[in-house]
Image (tube, rainbow, N blue to C red; front, side):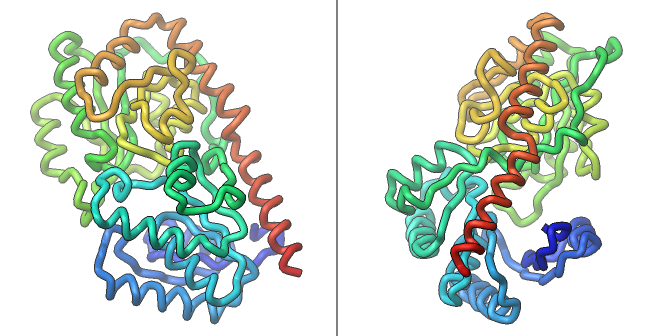
Length: 350
């Protein structure tokens, strides 16, 4: 967008890694602190006011938002200011997994916020069905974006076979219960009894402040037990994927998960739960295996199927996954959809 001549302002909580990178690209950074999981109405009202105040100062031609609170409060602020806005629902997250009274409030807020949106984008069909069936957003506004895209130049198809070594499973993601980390560890514990040389690795940050966070102390305890290897957060996942035989994601719900797209792009077979988002990327028997969520026994069975598949079968699944990424999830295709939509909204505004 910067290269195309747009002035790009980014409203987000300051991040010590990505904020400087975005600024270096030429984006105007506007710190927008928020507690993404907080439910304090005073705090959220303050966030809405800050969105309104900042957008009124910036006077953007279009506002594009992601994740629950920006989608709700950023959309409301843009609506009140008469700014065209495009909310992108990247996944429904823990609010729709838990199904509490908070879910009812959030659905009402979504409906209110999206009422004047030109379009509302979703990453998977399940989320579309949820919003349509519960009458949160009208069907004429709904469009699907097939994920946020994968850079196929960065995540290249792995060529050649990995050197003879113990088989390696890898789960990449934030260390949250919603990502199925506990089920993964339980499945690893079962399989270790039968396949003691197999490696089960975890890669990702501990997200302090999230009620579903798995503590580093717990992760290190599992390491001492000899069940998993925890590598923490790393700046580049590619070297770890190069030393992996299968990517696993036993998540409870996703938008369209990058971790599975990255593995598929590099030609790795996948094991994932048969839940929204994951089943957009994993086609049973084609590029991996699916299993029920919250079920360590079934997860272990799917992982054992992968272990017992021949090297040729796993290689074919990996190639199939790469083909799927090229045909549906290539970042170039996603950027083209952004360009078409932004140009249409701006043309209509004129």
